[in-house]
Length: 367
Image (cartoon, rainbow, N blue to C red; front, side, top):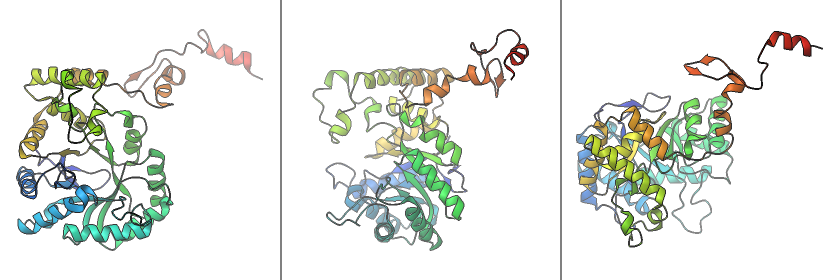
């Protein structure tokens, strides 16, 4: 699938590339990342290949990420409307200011105005709530976002890093009141983070939200660049974000990625990205790149087609433990659908049901 084979995002008509360029690495203000010129090169290559979806946030590299994107649009004379630019609100850039962050009306409107200024744009294509604000009623958040859409400052809205029950509540309220609906859900999703399959993924499928996974390579761990023998010597630029996940389980998954990569002539990173892209509900996967070389390596995953057996191997070795009642529901097929086949699924007979003559049993218990 080339980068210019676009997909619609969720239950909307917004066309986005199957990979989204994550701009968290734009700027060196956090001690790691890409310079402005490197960021320009990365965006140029991404767009030349057909990519049109760029994702950032108000606090990425202390606001510099948004400014780099805005400067790029003006200096490179790119047509603003050809790109789908997404950014996020929630993070507080003003220490000590209680309304400097969060998802209340005052904070959202201020954050939007500041992001527009840094992006040097009149509008934001997709505006994400970066995280659920437990101190603000969700109807206030959704009302403020609807006002921004009606004012033309925002085209579409989505949620990131929010519990499934809260996303469902927000979507239901918007439907009842005729407000702008959520069209997308941004969640961490990778071979090392699959617990989203318990509640968030099924919820997104049910409510028509396109899934845009972040950190599909788990902070670079799934690229295979970290080795077992070096685990105690590693001091990655992102510190504990990486070191805390360098477990035996992670290396088992990396070994399987490497094995499948050899079968396909691909890198472990490309295999890991192809796996995420194959998952139900995934619309556009967010790929980060600090260098042009990393971007090219990640884009190679678009041409990779995993077999059913290869996906099964990766599913099995990375199988997560999900919260109740996920496993319970998965295992009650015989009790609810015993001895039948529904939508292609065949269920064994219910061992606790009458095994001889159910009609005679009904007569015996009839009052």
